[in-house]
Length: 102
Image 1 (cartoon, rainbow, N blue to C red):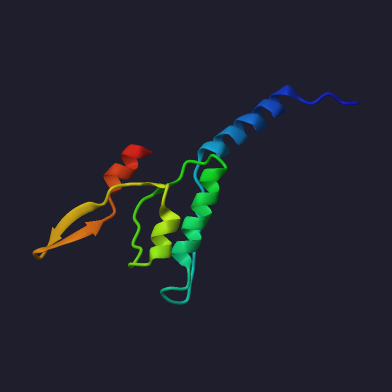
Image 2: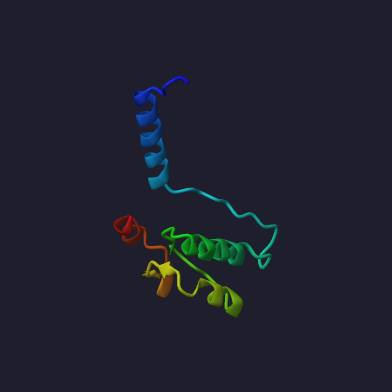
């Protein structure tokens, strides 16, 4: 039986630790509004949270859909930034707050 190279084992462990600290990007595509992109994303977020993964909503536009609001319950959410544009207050994604949360 050949003994494993300790340097290779250490490098493998370090690479796995780096991967574990990085986020993943998943893109949800849909042909039209109302086909379930947001609902699917939030459902996946709830499942990830149950597995102990830190999940935060950066911006949510539920469009008045009660089911969407319900599936978002319990997930952390970054407060929206209120911006005035031409006399109208608009909710916007708060990049600075999101980066601060890291």
